[in-house]
Image 1 (cartoon, helix red, strand yellow):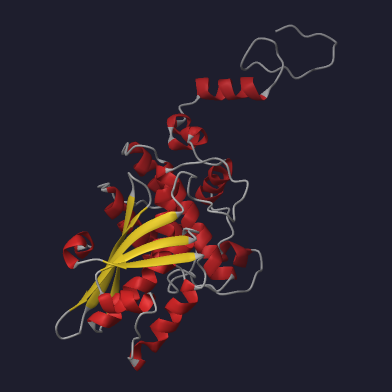
Image 2 (image 1 turned 180 degrees about the vertical axis):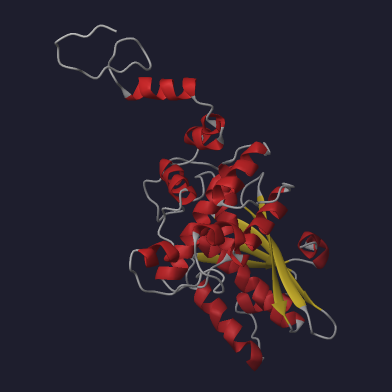
Length: 322
């Protein structure tokens, strides 16, 4: 060491030998001197995923617990409903919203069912869940990103617009994003999650059945999104009759297609009673079903064109498997 009379000055000794500090040589110095698992983790690879930049930023904020969940808002002095707007049971924080919420669990159950992916979405926090998903090498990890994003959007609709959250809406949006990814979002109000090659006529099948004692019934259906992609759905309808469950199946079909922003529909079912009524060729003279009739009438009015076709049961067997 040589002591001189000159003033001391700071010199950067990391990175290159120029002595000039920059973001690049700080980064290179860090990764060369520290064993950082994040460098090879999904947190780095995420920025290369084929998803919109806003979803990458959203994931980064969510993993770091920086999004505006009610728990975070309360820390800032906000006053409001503490419970999650999706399940209406537990306090809303990031871990609950994206992992432990019963609504989110149902979304992932349906995602797995429609993709045949045999991997559980789990972890102690959102970062662990995404890491486990990415390390399982299930193809593009963007499915997890889209699912979290659409779950958040559905939460916002339930919170700020007071609408009932829809599991089918989150599932079908996420699968559509995943199978038909697009970075272009110039007009978010016009079919934001479907690519342009999806036909404006969406073909769908629905069916329903009730046990003989009427104590348990359910409805299901298949929506053909494209030549290579279909969406399957199922709802438990509680107690009721075959007519009621077929009516609920028709309503759920229209409800899902409304979320798809499809204006022209082709709906196929094997219940001649329901199909004739939808085509205004008959009436349902059951007072107990009046509420469901009104719901369908309101939904029908939101489409430009609706075509309902009756098919025989043997041509609708695939929906029975739901």
